[in-house]
Amino acid sequence: MKRFEGRRILVTGAAGGLGTALCARLVAEGAHVIGTDVSAKKLAGLEASIASNAGTLTTACIDQSDPKAAGQAVKTVIATQGKIDSLVNNAGIYPKATAEEQDVDEMRNVIDVNAIAATSIMGAVVPDMRRAGFGRIINVSSITFSLGFAELSAYVASKGALIGLARVWARELGPDGITVNCISPGAFQTDAEKIHPDPEGYNRFVLDQQSIKRRGTPEDFAHAAAFLLDAESGFVTGQNFLIDGGWVMQ
Ligand SMILES: NC(=O)c1ccc[n+]([C@@H]2O[C@H](COP(=O)([O-])OP(=O)(O)OC[C@H]3O[C@@H](n4cnc5c(N)ncnc54)[C@H](O)[C@@H]3O)[C@@H](O)[C@H]2O)c1
Image (cartoon, rainbow, N blue to C red; front, top):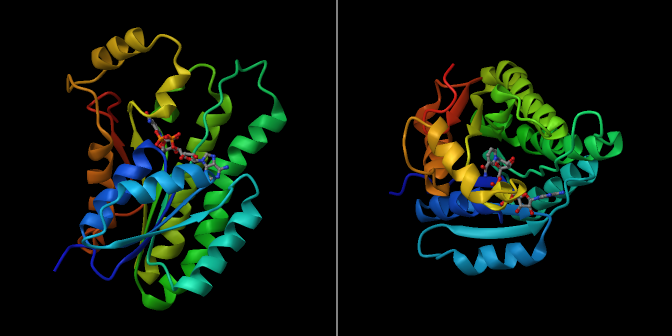
């Protein structure tokens, strides 16, 4: 029997660089993955890239910039396709602005997409988890919260919110067998890295900072997420796992 057989795992931002690798890993290990993303085009690419000889993938186009509507859309997915036992809040946007030039409306949008929608989606999936006495939730934060990366005020604030939320949810949901943890990726070569104007210089900087002298791969991220989603990881909750090749140490 495959590790995630019988499991139904919702991954947001599923069609992005890290989300795609995670969906592939979970489907290969037998899960039914519900992948959501704002981009229908990227979701079509995700579907085409996943071999379906083990678990299955279904997708739903959900825009997290309206958090209430996103939570409602997930409720509709559950009503039509069945309950979900695990959630990976992975969708994220990362616009740059200096601290004093940060537009507050843009900041609200970043926090809506990255953190408040994560909250409304959590609210949609948790009732079934409580009834089942089992659930796994992962919030994808970022090591930028530990490092305080320049020109990323809105993003870093949203990623700090995800860590705080995970700690509160872990306390509230733990009695019902639901674990909540964060993964804080370091630097991965997805679209997210394109915000850095000098790719070669940034690559050198990353390798210099990391203890492990190779770039992290989306599969490294997927491996950590699979560990936390595993039924056997039921005694680990409220934690923040830094998957960064030994960059930040805390
Ligand atoms: N790549 C890195 O180095 C890195 C580092 C730290 C944290 N992270 C975090 O990991 C997560 C995945 O990042 P990634 O590297 O795969 O980036 P990515 O840009 O490839 O993926 C993010 C996904 O979120 C989706 N998305 C954007 N706006 C949305 C919205 N309004 N509603 C729904 N979905 C939306 C995008 O379409 C995209 O598919 C993000 O939360 C990111 O902040 C990434």
